[in-house]
Length: 152
Image 1 (cartoon, rainbow, N blue to C red):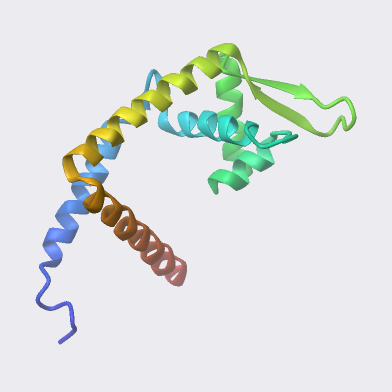
Image 2: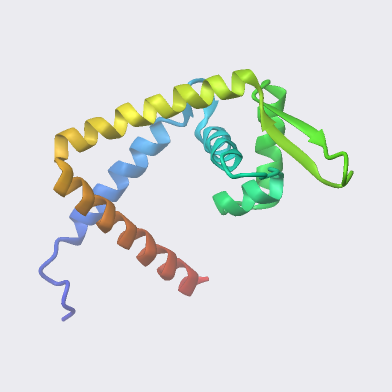
């Protein structure tokens, strides 16, 4: 008998399935895919660094996604008018990615959305439970990453 025998595993399964279902239900945010929103937020975050030239490789690394996936997302965002790609004058191989004015506007709107969403959660849980939730979810994330890397 293992040490978890007194824990109802079905409650874990149900809880994680409910979170997954919720995530699948809300695949878009302000008319764009959540994956595109993540890229826009990443570009905004990276642009805050001094002298940071943003390219697909930096986005890919920062979000831990494959470079072809990042390329596809940036292309989609460029087609929608949220990002621009410019060839660097000093190194023609380097394509710099920046937010357009409409890209900056949607990043602002997305940031406000997440601020309201998570401020509401903190208000509901309280500061102490919110900090505990963050700590526990971080541990869950580490555990699942370790588990799946062993399985592969």
